[in-house]
Length: 346
Image (tube, rainbow, N blue to C red):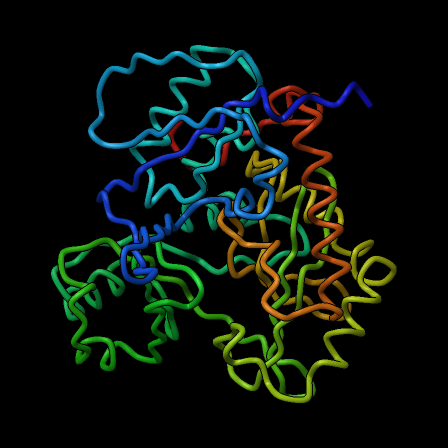
């Protein structure tokens, strides 16, 4: 391994959402509010001490010329959702191209990581089922149903707004008739993602969603959410499933990882990202049903006080991330492994 770089010399590419909106939370009388920027890589919240002294560059609307004075070190692109930060990512890519420095999670790769682009890029990866996903725009639910029929997208299907994560405003429709009768303002004259739903119930009648952290060439199982319904998140975790999850976390490296490693390596190569997450279902043979793959996922949040079953994977992810950040020679831009996503414009 080459000498570790000093993270204080790094340039962090940050951004303002295209719509200029962030979440402000009141912290009490005469205290400054806190602001949440959705659609970022999220890990800086947990690694701030390591980046002490690094330079932040804030990009975003309006589009236009830039006049920057920046440090000479490597760059880290912290913007992760192309549907939220398309303007900032475009500016970030111009900076990367002009300066010719190493950049973790290149803006160009992130710009190609929308749900529809990812679905097309990964459609033929061996061992992976990738549901068809289309980005559509319509005047309302009835018009959306018409467009879906024209595109021959099959039911049941999932509909969600762009830039939404964690099951937010995610709706499932069994038939066209149900979709046509829906009243949802966010579907009117706005782009949405439409995804064909694939059943993934396990033989024991439970549903399982695995979150994989892909950090360079490392693949770490962050958690397994187990529930009795298809929409899985921390709030829908079924009671009494802790032992099952702990067993899966403990056996992952020896059991499932060797089976899925080639598929994950190919996913990583096609997406061209250095750090990203995969939410998926995995059966016992390692066959994967992909839910999403992007750079937005949070791996380092600790929502349960230690000790617990997630301490080990969180620490493994943290260590792997710091090691990768400190060694730009391992980044895709430096090893020549960045690959364009198929089916998208250059």
